[in-house]
Length: 372
Image (cartoon, rainbow, N blue to C red; front, side, top):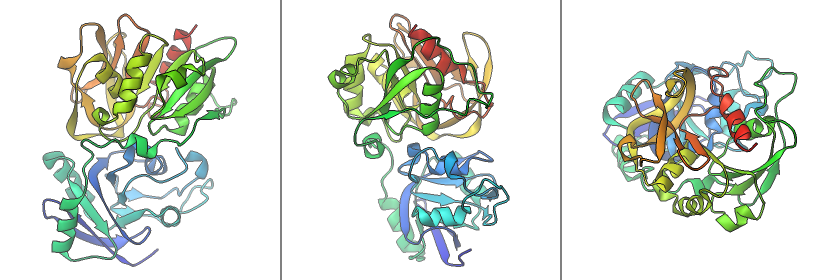
């Protein structure tokens, strides 16, 4: 493990010093905390973390190493990674690399040995402050100045920055010997076009698993180009940044509304709400973790969900033809909705992440069944 010094500065003036356990350099971003005890590799490869520096609340990270088959994308997306303590000796036989070796390989600036509890309490009371993590600058005044100059996620279309550059087909699914959920559709596969606003691989596997022939398209794809694929349905993925800033996608989805069944997750859910005429707002510190209880208002069932978002839908702004279907039991924020007339529904959380583990998997089957 490297013994190089690293420093973290927050825009409010707090400066903490620790050790570098990733790539050298310095990166600025919006500070958020994640409460998951496992899944650090999936977090690091989730494009929804673009523009953010992630603080892990669990005190020991890296103990099972990194297995590449668990990656949610080909790259690493957080601006920086913050841990109380990192293990560089993985105990899992599946591990191909230790976490510190993976961080260096993917150019992630990371720091350990800082008080992550203090940072988490700060975020909870002050919100998602901007920060700077550096291995080359340790001057408090300089670091705080850089943190204050960093960009927040407000007003930024980060989905276009992380999206694929061209359309592609996806066919990988789960090992059929593994007892995942039963597909919701029967018979011939249905073609679905999935917008890549920062899509995760497990979402794509989930769509294939329930009987879809999946084509992934970039975030800026126009409605006519989507319809040219002659899809039976349209999927709107997760992604980073401010949903109100993804203007091209909002216009496109508005053009597609009512023409095909639509299912949205996370950023896709927020984009749909804007198309419906609702409003979104930035949360104080967002939802980032694998233990959020969500109630299905239709069935009364409670699902334990994985979440990663800093913006939410204003429930008071939902129009009369949109029904609230799910709420967060911690803070009563909007977690799901459906259109009363068009075959469109969405959820704020991540049903593919399986923290429950299969509490929410039925949503992919529901989408498949919606298409007949």
